[in-house]
Image (cartoon, rainbow, N blue to C red; front, side):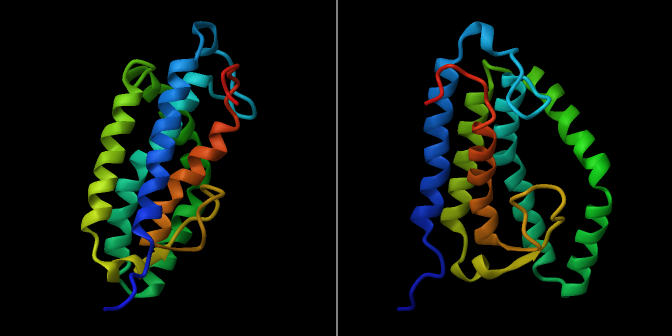
Length: 178
């Protein structure tokens, strides 16, 4: 039997680590810290915490894109990524204000449950993925996120939200962070 192409256990462990950490963060936020500015972003701690959840929500959509564009000729995917790169300024505005608005709905009382639901969905998807699909990939807009590479495989996409989470976790201005 052939060796698996990816370490599914490692891919599954990363979101679980973040999920446990996120619930610990939520439990430790003092009332006066929710609205406090984060460190290095324009978001408050509450908005940034939602944005960290959003990174996992986004992956479900990125998986669909990989499955579609990974089957198309390379120039199609490369062209799509270029168009998205050109749209970086409006993307950043939508990303910022979208997280501000969404944090009103998925606020401190709901974002933990949303993260649980999204990670559960990603875990189920990961379990059912065929090994051969993990090498399928597509081009991404490298100006949108520091953790987007020019070409990312399905395995890279499953690994992306943990990097995004850890990046923004360092920007929270919470006394409980150790």
